[in-house]
Amino acid sequence: MTGSVTLRKAMASDLLSQVRAQETALRTIDWALESGRVHHAYLFVGPDGVGKELAAFGLAQALVCERRGGDAGPGLFGAAEKPPVRACGTCSACSRAVPREDTRRSHHPDVVVLERGLYTAQQIGRTTEEKQDISIHQVRTLVLARAAFAPHEGRAKVFIIRRAEELNLSAANALLKTLEEPGAKTHFILLSSQPEALLPTILSRTQRVRFAPLPDDVVTDLLIAQGVEPARAKDAARLAGGSVDAGMLLADPDESETRERFVESAFAATASPTIEQVLALAESAKKDKDQLPSNIAALASALATRAAEAARAGRPDAEALAIRGRFALTALEHLAGNGAAQLVVEAMLTRMRAV
Image 1 (tube, one colour):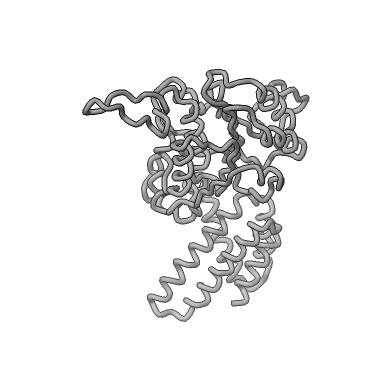
Image 2 (tube, rainbow, N blue to C red):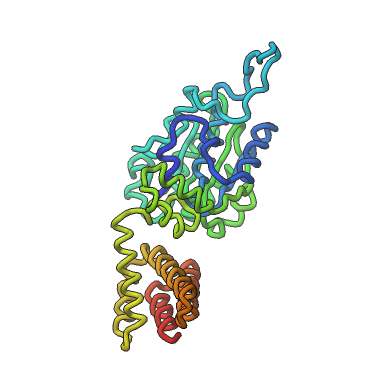
């Protein structure tokens, strides 16, 4: 899933006010806006689906807002009120800064979005579509061609780069000079869940703002707000790792059925007297590697539940179930470290069978 579920459902209001459980990041952004010291290049880092993109468009919204920073008018006793720090959320600029769900792009001329595959080959001067990375054609067309000009509406120009780790080497190097010498009122906000994949030179020229995984109760609330049934939302949040995007995938009924089949197959393979079922499940995992992390997370959760039930009942298998649960968590770590899906599942189930 690309992008933030929360952002796609956000209305044209102050987007920063909709960011949940990211107090540290919001303090950094608010201080920059209040002090007038907004950095020319930010790197918002953290898992997908935790509010990075919502905050990025909220910052862009504040920078192009028609009312922010001006005279707020007389207060209750006649004295002028302090201008708002964040976007007003209601002016034309604020409304246009919010990306449309159909295009995933802002309709404000000074809020420019870069993302792999977001534009047709013709739009960015390529002969083929972008499939593997963000190409230099996108940087040339959207950034370099505009960098020398003042903001169209005079307030600020903001470039937001989704999944910045997907910039290929040529694109990253082309972007680098503009990051080093940005024009007046020009700002960049790079979003990444894998900052270690970015060039060190880009890392050194951006101010990092960290976004943490969301608490389970916040993910549950946000999933319910997206229309997920409460019980399913709670179950999905427990496995989502603090990500609303992951929670939406986990709450999908078809995805849930797939996970349940994997868990049942894993239990059967662990109990089988032969290794044929282990090898079969490991082979199928190679074909469904995108689904595999949520499948193994579901297995770890099921093992933890069974271990707790066994312990409460005083059954002797409680410890074995808990150990198998730890093996599942270890398998998740190996996957996150780019371990081969088939080998990870085969090793996990083999270790479980030995307990």
